[in-house]
Each structure stands twice: as structure tokens, then as C-alpha cells.
Amino acid sequence: MIGIFDSGIGGLTTVKAIMEKLPGYDIVYFGDTARTPYGTKSCGTVINYSLENSKLLMEKGAKLIIMACNTASSVATEKVKENFDTPVFEVISPAVKRALKESRKKQIGIIGTRGTIKSNVYEKMIKGFDKSASVFSEPCPLLVPLVEEGWTERPETAMIVKKYIQPLKVRQIDTLVLGCTHYPVLKDVIQRKAGKRVKLIDSAEAVTDEVVNFLQENPDFDKSLSKNGKTDFFVSDVTEQFKITARSIIKKRIELKHIEI
Image (cartoon, rainbow, N blue to C red):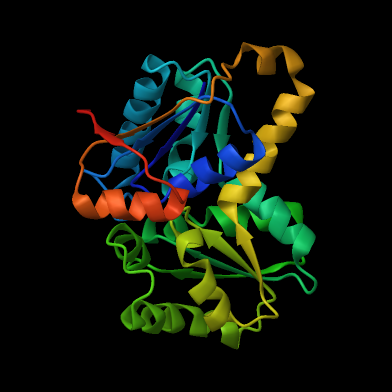
């Protein structure tokens, strides 16, 4: 079973990508909707949440963990790997590799939560691979709540996205990393405001491709994963809006099961 966790329901973009590229694989998802967003929390708190989330997934039968949360990936990856003897995937390095591959002028923009941007993890990793690359980051603290509330088509959301993207457009970026798995839900409006010449990098798609490659290279491990087409969705808080937004992401009716953590 593939285990995936996020600070809320935005990580369902990763679930959707896994379902499309690994059809039939059993999936268990946990969205920490009661404690979202993670981007405003301290590093210590996010690490503790990530360890609790990973433990829950393992107890539900996960044999592989995807940290579908950029904030958690930026500060908690090593701690999760230290505490769980199972393959652990984060969403940052796959997105970085794809951004460097896709960028023509190495003018790369990053948008993410305050926690992710403050960690400077994207710039450090990009510069580690290519010192000639220029990286420009912009925190977007309002985007996660807008996605969680289902405000994807509101004119107010478009105005906020434009305000966040404008400083990056001034820098003439040619590639923009969506440094939060909630952001692909807003991909259309982000693309409009960034401009058609800017290549968007979806971290959910990037990490999914990395998992697919890992399973192809490790056939014995792949055989150990259950493939009954079963998908369970757990959240730490359930609201009617969460249900509506979840359906809009997965594109079909799903059941969000409440679980205490």
C-alpha cells in the first residue's frame, strides 16, 4: 500500500497523479485538516506532525510513504527517514530536478508557504545542482486556505494570485515551481497570471514520476505492494467544504473518513 500525507486536502493532487500513473495500486491518504496549514507552524511542530502522520500511515498498512507537503518535506524528511524503515519520498527534490531540466534561461521562480520559502530549501538545492541558476522565491500564505475553502474560481483568488506572481514576472522567470501540493488546484489561474511562456512545475507530478521509476527499478519491492484498487481517505477534521473540494480534485465522489491523531 502507498501511503501519502499532507497538511490538508491539497495532497490529493498527488493521490490523483498516483492513481493515473499507477492504476490499481492500493493507496491510503491522510490529510491533517484539523491542523492545517503547516506553513505557519514552527519547524519542531511540523516535524512532530510529520512523524505522527507517518506512523498513522504505517499502522494503516503503508509500505511506502510520500510526504505530499512541501513544508513537511523542507524540514522533516530526514527525521521521517530516520524513524521509519521504509522508502520515503519528498516533493522538493523531484520538482527541483524537473525545473532545472525544463528551464531554458535558468531563471526559476518558487512559490510556497511561508515555512517552505523561509527554509530556503529550494534555492539551496537548485544552487547545489547548478550554481549558474537564478532563483526567486515568493511566499503565498493565502493560497492554501483558498484551496481548502474551494475558492478556486473566485475573482478574489485571481487578484491574490496576480499579486503574488507579479514580483516574479518582473524578474523574467521562465519556470515556476508550484512549491505546495495545494497549488496545482489553482494551476489554470497561476498559468494565466504568470504568462504562457512560463513553464509550471507540478511537484505532485514530479514526485509521482520518481515513485514510478523507483518501483520499476525495484521489482521485488513493487511485488510487495497490494494492488486491489483500494483507496482510503482519512482526515483529522471533516467539513462539507472539504468533501466538495476533495471531489473537485479527484474528479469523483470519495469518502473522507474522520480519524483522531
